[in-house]
Image 1 (cartoon, rainbow, N blue to C red):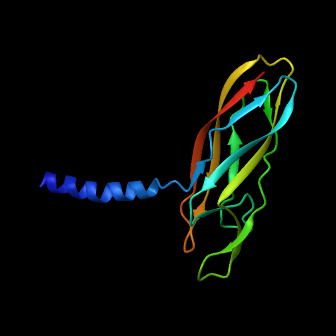
Image 2 (cartoon, rainbow, N blue to C red):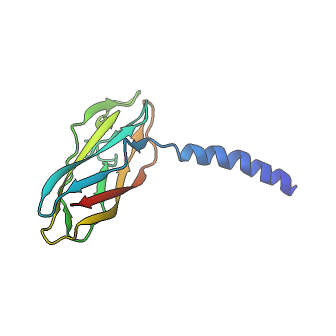
Image 3 (cartoon, one colour):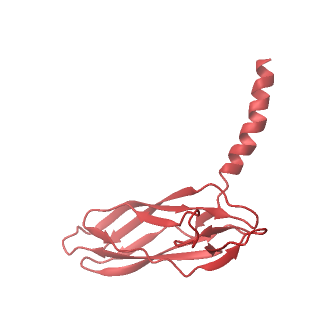
Length: 155
């Protein structure tokens, strides 16, 4: 009987688990930010959204939908400014009247980055976090966090 329970568990757990791990968003490339001491630049981080999906914009326009947010962990002597999201498009789920703002296909997020004049030259590692809620043409899914490495090189 225990073998039967184990087989049932495997049949139900893995398909559900793999579905829950569906990646709606991925990085186009691992971010590497290059800048000089005392310099401020606008870094770009490019994300690709899976075909037939979209994610809520940073301002979905409807109270119950969660906005996309983006953060980078602080690094000593390196400052990150206010995130600049791209323009969004509008979308309506079939069978509803609500229209909301979304990102689809590819999005490029811009972030001002500055290195202090006294920062030590070298390579710094940080972590980025994109929080998003994905939807398809019929429904929206539970929100997810997409964490990824960010390399900063100060010359």
